[in-house]
Amino acid sequence: MNKNQYYNDEQKVEKELDSLFDDLKNTKLKKAIKKAQWHSIFRNVLISFVVLGVMLVGGSIVNRELIYNMEMPVQIAVDSFNKISAPNKYIGKVSRYHEILGGRNEYTTYKIIEGKVVFAGEGDYSYGLLRNEWGNRIGTESPSILGASHDVGDLKEQKYNELGQREMVFFYPFISYPEYKNDLQLLDSIGSDKIMEMALSFDQAYSLDEVNKMLPNNVTLAWYWVDDLNEQEKEDSKPRKEKQQGPDGKTHEVDYPARIRSEKNAYGIKAYDVNREPLEDPAQLFIWALQNGMKYDTKYKSEFVRVYNNIAGQDGELTKEDIKVWGVVVTGDVNNLKTLRTLPFIKASSLGVVTEKY
Image (cartoon, rainbow, N blue to C red; front, side, top):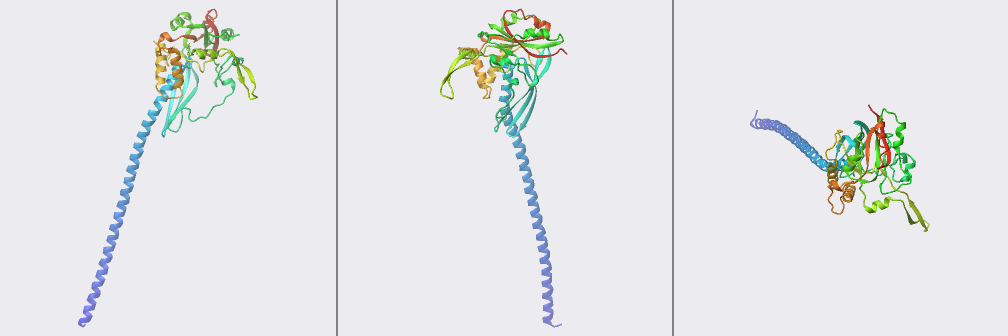
């Protein structure tokens, strides 16, 4: 082998070794790069999941706090409104549903008839940034037999609720009606095994203490119907004739019959709490409910303000002495309620829920 050939072979071997090492280097580099890429992807995915988890947990906490803040005023208003209205009717079980930036509460109601709980229907209300308290409901429709009575013309047919329970109505003491509802006479056709509620309308306004003394002890006084109208509202409740211009451009005389008050829109004071226990100071609870209701901007606020101001009078401070009672709701059996027939201060009587004793 000559010197040149040896030199060439050596160079060839060196090139092959360099190529081999270059391949090894490239393979290791590629593996290192790929490993680094996978580490980077894993790290980014992990960070994304952590950030997403933090956002979900944080968003859930923020959403929950927002919902509680939106729910509380409406919940207090609904509860307070039930305390100043809904004769002998109480809110029972409440089911609460929280959603995104809002929620909905559903509740049952019941009446207490001589200590017995009687289901009286369901209700619901909503709250949130994207819904109103009606749950964005645009209206409801029902036949007239399920509606509320507003004037003496509505007395032509007895109205009921969806459960088939009779609507109780009240008659104003400052109006002389051509005829009055007298459901006390229905007691003769009701079995002695029944218990019921009865709305009584008085001949004039009385104080709470006077009412407590006037009624016999053998009936249960469940609810006081109070005077919540100002002088103009009382005038508007009386029968009257008004001249109005019709679509034809001519003036017509329109008759407005005397108004009555349905239990569905009457205001008053509950004598018992939700557990059938007699309240020590029902009037004060009524006043507190009005004051609580006025604090929050809900659909009931205007009525809370109207009722409070009308009862409080010119001084603007509502006390027990300001409250005048126009009627009551009592409960009892047939024999006990018959004792009311001879009481001269009762101008009208309206039968409500009738149920079995047991």
